[in-house]
Amino acid sequence: MRTTVGIVGGGPAGLLLARLLHQAGIDCVLLECRDRAYVEQRQRAGILEQGTIDVLRACGAGDRMDREGLVHDGIELHFDGRRHRIDFPALTGGRSVMVYAQTEVVKDLIALQLADGAPLLFEAQVTAVEGADTDSPVIRFTHEGREQTLRCDYVVGCDGFHGVARHAIPDGARRTFERTYPYSWLGILADVAPSNDELIYAHSERGFALLSMRSPVVSRLYLQVPNDTDPHAWSDERIWDELDARFALRDGGWKLQRGPITSKSVTPMRSFVAEPMRYGRVFLAGDAAHIVPPTGAKGLNLAVADVVVLARAFAHLHTAGSTSLLDAYSDTCLRRVWRAEHFSYFMTTTLHPDPAQSPFDTRLQIAQLDRIATSTAAATELAENYTGLPIG
Image (cartoon, rainbow, N blue to C red; front, side):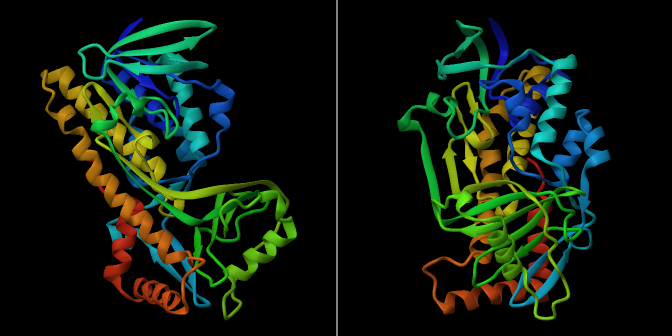
């Protein structure tokens, strides 16, 4: 097999890149190691930045999103027994975000790809990416019981943190930067209507809590817990009681609604960046190159930004014969990546009490949150980053 661009990984980054390349008339083949059912059920992020929304609409994947997605014009902060709403459009010139689960984005992109896109092979287990520094890199994979080879002009690794594509970059040419946080998130899905129209981020001396949603009738909530927590050690009643305590307000003017919990899981908190995001003819995008803690809602959106920049670069090569945008890809993306890493770090360390922190540290967190609540400049900085900085 031979193609212009071989894409490893059929998550949102790989699927969107394949769609954008198809629209630009560029040949590609997309290889995904899991079966379709698994990929379409994989639970991940649910907040789409304005730029991500615009890209999905432009590539033809926005119809169901616009029907079923929940537009949010702000978030609420709960801290020190108080509540404060941040109005995104008022602070950003009209930008907002949308709650639409990554699983649904993936379903929409898969349907488009299978209907009229480039080849998409499920259960294609990639074993190696070779020849990154040659003019014809190779992807070796197993599909339908046979070992196969895909020869490419370029390879794009969208196969996540544990994928093989990043290892096509020699150790001596690759640097990694990472931080592991001393806490995790216990996340639940509950069959109950969300208790608020917008997300609530709660700072409490007991720990962080987040109210989110998946639909008008399904709530998604999170609790800060110690690392290595067993989610099944937490009873449903204990989870609801702890959520109540962390969202509590002095005036009692808001109440969390309870319902049957259908899912429990624990998510570790970590930051990771691999540099560069390009070596020879191999490019990295999404979680293959960077991971952020979920507090800033940046993971999926960073992946989208990566592939938009990369698709523009391939289109420029296709139409103008120039590699200038491909050559600039890593530097272009890393500027945005590090900005998002910093914002995610800021949101995480401001809202989560470290198990080892002192009362002094706690007062600093409250002072920072109070600054956001009382300063238009501070609130604007948060709103601009949350709704998404310009792509490219």
